[in-house]
Image (cartoon, rainbow, N blue to C red):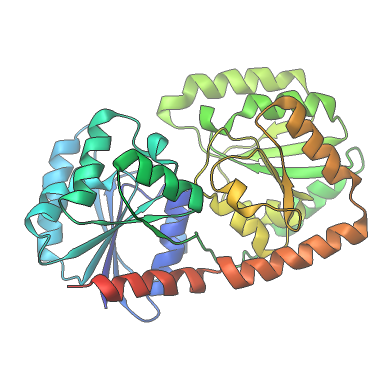
Length: 365
């Protein structure tokens, strides 16, 4: 089968990492092309792309969207494919092609976030709605909560639901250094947690910092990108974090897996989420997650694999952290075993790719 994946960039976000993993897995049995629209400074996750995947980079400027729209549609007309699979804001750029070729090609679109946050502006909402209803693109939601939001937001009766998947994470050449560093931190702190989140109000860093004021025995290493839109927010968070000594922001790193494997667990303080890839990566090595009940996270976390706060308040996240700290080592080992099994049975990239393949087969030209 000839499959074309289309995404705006290969930045370090969860959707981008998912597309890399999915493309790699699909390329084992299919002819896969990955198209990106805009050029970016770093290529951290692009390095993970399999040689079997054909990469087409249009290298557009982010402030020249109309030009890249025409360029993408021209490339799609020249590219041979049975299925086109789009992500994030791609409906805006592919709409003309999808409309005029709707009887020739079938298009799949994955919604990676709660619908009103995925397309908050009216224009984006109307474009996506036309994409689904007029161009017959098939919406795929990454969690039950995302699916409900998509149906309500776009007045759809049904969406496919395929939960994100990933590979089991592995150590990099930097692992021993990270492991030593975390070991040193444990001399002063009882628990060291990973917080994998770009600098964005969605991720609610301030709540996490406020909770850490009450949990001085916990240390959080936060990592993620700062986009141009969120420079002011990032500066505010970094200034605010100076009030405590147990929160550290280290920016974008190419060895997130080392920090996950070395840590005691993963923590999220988000206001909303789709289904974070970093949560699933943590599950692949049995890491317990502490989180606010944000989007798809609430679909996943139960008493066997994590600690879910009852709401988004400081008090409830504090209770969740203290609950984790009360677990015996025996309890933690039992949970870690269950988490690994759940990952293997539900969230491996092979299972995810097989489910997408079934949709492709049912809808290819």
